[in-house]
Length: 433
Image (cartoon, rainbow, N blue to C red; front, top):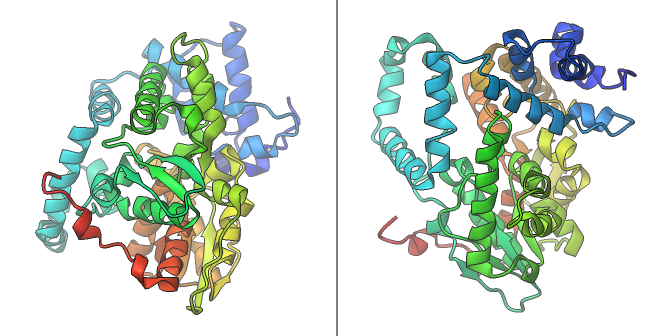
């Protein structure tokens, strides 16, 4: 395809007006490489990593080109060839992608250390005394993005099996890795909303990363391993996948990748059929509520003006656009203000704000300017990466705007409807967390 309808939707092309920074330009480079007209070198590698992977081009494409699959395959070739290999880059990739994010226990231990650093006041003191200025430049620029780690992780807030009365559905709940550390309350809120809709909730203990970090960074073998681990975790908790009505994700970026397990494991003799069932049953939480019939809280209205920022992979990857807005409309007292360019990338894009801070910063500034125009006090976001990015930007701009998941707003409304269902989080926390 050469029509170019994707060009106006591509953030990097919009910012630079360079053809190579567009989906059409990148596909041309991939084709030239496949045809033997281009050598796989560092320039090709840099270009593929300059792409946000936001998938806005897929929404715009009239031919339905599967850019995501080509994009991931290209990055895998780049990593296999080693054209971008450097000692520092190799170490960072090994430590994060190949070490920490395949070991959930270790990730939690690091999260606990960061929590202690934050609640002890050391982080505030270091910032007040400008000790962060002593860090290397790249770390100094990343430090403001540091999210707040929660005291309790998802296993402490959600029992392995929670059953409502009456029970109408059986679902598995995925809690994620980073979301488990910094937004565990969203996972609790998701479980509460599911219970309010008659869903028996199965939440496996100590879940692994979904593998999107690995797939988007050229490590397809590790992405496949993460997929197998998650399938086994759900089966170990809830039984055969066929026995579940749905497998629930509440993170836009994770959900887009989780729905791709069928393709990821299509040639795995042991897991191919199970992965196909997984992909068929994987539902974003908003999508699932719309499918079974969204229940509206009957609490007294609590007036709030709210806007909705669309996660790229939720709207472009999963095509879930209307359901989150319906969730917000169901909450008494909420006034929904439409966000200009609501589906334009905020610059987070997984770890793009770490690897490409300049472009990520430009996109964040654009998003914050649009948020300013709405004049709201609350912005709803359904992806942890987006929320971290927005919170950091709002904090640096000294803007008093709350960033919250749509499902958390719904859960709050259900609790106001029936205060007896209020979650006593501390009572659910095991001593051995």
